[in-house]
Amino acid sequence: MDDVVEYQRRVMEGKPKYCPERKLLLKFLKGRILDVGCNYGDFHKYVTERGKEVDGEVYGLDIQVTNYRENMVKGDAHFLPFKDESFDSVFAGEIIEHLHNPTIFLREIERVLKKGGVAVITTPNIHSLVYIRKSLLGKDPLEHSGHIYAWDLHLFKRLIRSATRMKIIECGFADPEGVSKIAILIHSIIPRLSWFLYVVIKK
Image (tube, rainbow, N blue to C red; front, side, top):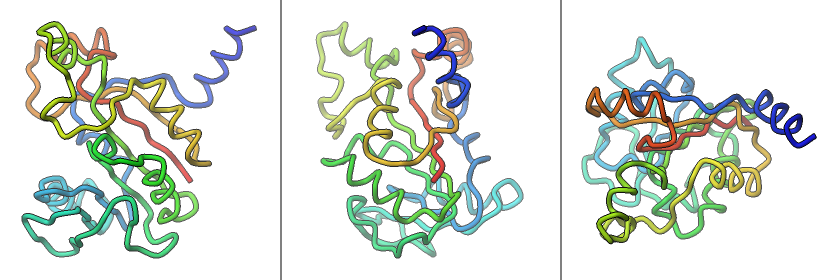
């Protein structure tokens, strides 16, 4: 019976996938897009310059805007300074692990998304080779990283389900730009060793 339930859950959510480049997740973004934790604006710039690949207008938010671009605002991710249902898409790349209250943040994403809107969230993977290497060397994986929390995919999905009413439509593992071909090969065979987790959720 448990096997049947697990199979049905995978069918409903989609089996975890492997994405060799995090920016390939842009395919989910469209319309009015909010990039939370835009930092220096690298991702914001990438999306803006790839207009043929990304059909939308990008707005960036960060607690400290260090490289101002058009449509960037300074703000706290716990209290997004936007009206309800302001965006068609939200991207939050490696930001949730820095926040004191990820539950509030997820509810804010749900609030600012339009009905039918989609959010893509990525966060470091606690089972990645990077974390494993630090642990084997006797180091705290979270030390000096500014990270408050760390998740595996199972716990991350539980967090989203407990915090929101949004539906997980895809989930899996991803790597940053510039990862070696050897790492990509290893991660394609054993995805759970990848750098990042990702979830795509729909309101």
